[in-house]
Length: 249
Image 1 (cartoon, helix red, strand yellow):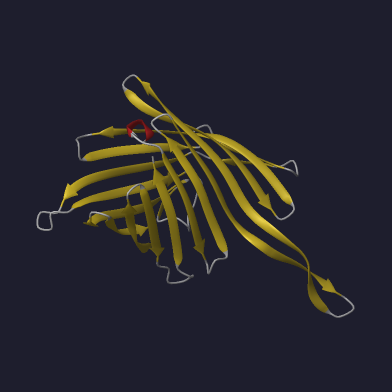
Image 2 (spheres, rainbow, N blue to C red):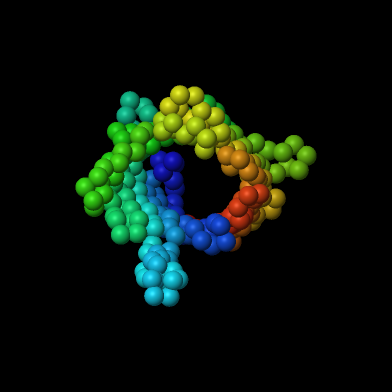
């Protein structure tokens, strides 16, 4: 939560899935405890479109297109009746073959500290629904969803190393019967768990569970620089890799 920030952070991240077919890139900046800006792009590039050549009786590639989503998030906080509330307006651009769309919405978030070591947070995504306006005059609507997360900081008694345990769930209202971990009516939910263990003054080992598979990773720091690597194992599709670099002022 940017309310507690004592420095300015800058981060870039690149991730690939399905043997590099799906590309995911992020540029993020947090300017002290005032404002944060995140620019993301996720997409598949150079998708061939084919047609049938009646003379050769063979298909041919007549065009390459990109399918991508670009989103800009601008976050800031306000203290309302003793609660730190995060407001994040967001703007999206979607490009699918020859069609494009624009969208705009708002996320709301807050947190509560039960103790110095235990924190609970929530985020209401697309709080007032998010319209997606297509160039072919059609409109989609992204319904609200809720993220709930808790984090607990502790110290291993024998190793004398610090650790952090995180549990999170996402609740959707999109009738995701088959693609969700649990579903009930229009509601569905997915779960995530994470454990961070400090194994060296400059290194943390990461272990997690993401919806339906295990993840692992490593965070390495040197002075004001941080490098994060994450690996996600997938038994049906290709494994996923995610690398990010962060700099603090």
